[in-house]
Length: 116
Image (cartoon, rainbow, N blue to C red; front, top):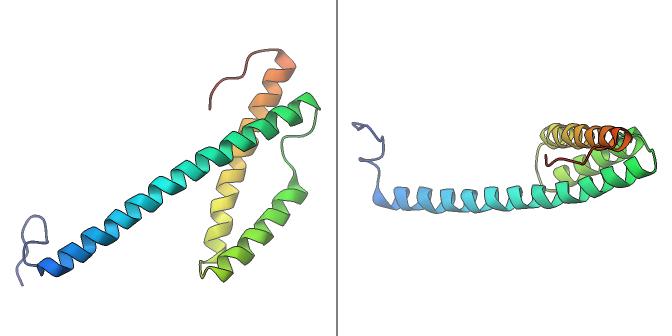
């Protein structure tokens, strides 16, 4: 089988069609993930403002540990690698904490919150 620049010219059209269908589903899922993350961050921003107003620490290690355990269980039941799910949540939590720290700093310094 020879290949062209695109690598798909010699592939059965039914295979190309199936690949396109699967990729369209992946694109739709990616869009949903982005929108879900945006909604999650809207909520966590509100949490950050609430914590800042009440001088609560930006991080909550007890809750974070519970969330990791919960997410690992969800991942296992969904047949997703729990280690991957934990890494993903840790990445999100680190970003949330960074936002909460910024919100707390702005509350202390009296500056207006910025997007991000």
